[in-house]
Image 1 (cartoon, rainbow, N blue to C red):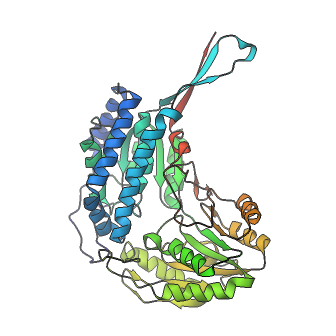
Image 2 (cartoon, one colour; image 1 turned 180 degrees about the vertical axis):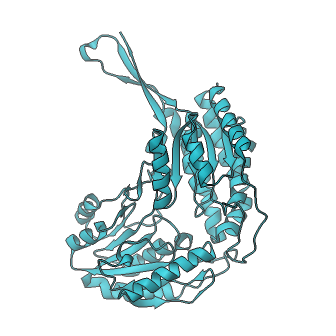
Image 3 (cartoon, rainbow, N blue to C red; image 1 turned 30 degrees about the horizontal axis):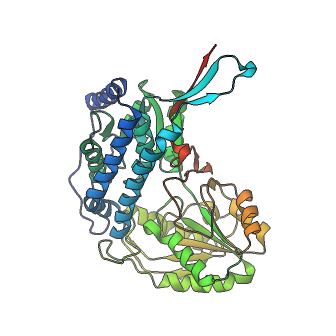
Length: 453
């Protein structure tokens, strides 16, 4: 049975468990959300004002939420504060952009007689299933567009994030959301399936593993529910040319180590043109070897512990299996408990698990390629298709490669350039649907056509 409790990955300390809801509790949660949707008479202006207040609560109580995030998954505190700030940006973005995106749109009518318009309406109760690696940000990018649209939310957080889950529910209530507009639930996977099947639930959004995505999509499909899935990734970091290789290496390190290396859109495969490969590898290994796992609460820590003992053991096993399958080790730091120093692998060959699987932690795989075509072929030779990074001094080459990559996102000569206004999502086994940006407001929106003679 799932247990919701904080298990601090830095100290090993276990917090008090939170009991799962029983059937009556789940019914009460769904009934509150449905009643809030049916009884909502607020204007779009009112909902935008709510989002601005939610953003302000995030800013006012950022330290409190950051403390919870650090304790739950070991994120360096400076990054946790940054995560909360980003959440506030997301709520403010949708408050600003919703009036424009949700405005009624007139359509030309053949023959010129009568009128036709498109109106954007909410669909109802949505169920969100969120992961542990970004306890606040993942919620914001799901909740913000749907709260401003007028949908109501029932949300299941990751079992190790009950503190964040309760704080976020509290933040939204403190901002003045109607009762039932956002309801946190502590439920297990079987109960989640029952919630998805409930006829009051009109859509589901999940961020998590491939396995979880497949399970949720199966239940949703049987019940004809719209689903947005943001799953795993093995994002390529392609280096074809550089005027300043040191700067590119700094970007590569940041792209691999952000969030302790535990991000679905982190750079994981480094694909480097042969003319600069050796120098890149030498500089990359040198930079990563300087990084040590530190106390996530200490100022300046860039790499905290992995989120749990089981996560660390899984990653250690992946590294050992890769070596057994012929991979060479360019760097392997100390690994003890949840402490996991960076690893760099080379000579990873097609046909081995390490060639296609996702390393969810500070493990980098570096490949040498002959040219642009080989780089694109290798980058696309994966079951995933979330994001990618392309570094080149040739703008035309950047455009060609961006067009050729089978992914949902491409960042050219940039790392950490995500924004509330930029859609986030992937293709292939990285999932489907989009969050953030204007597209994030359309996923659970009933665009209704009204034709008048």
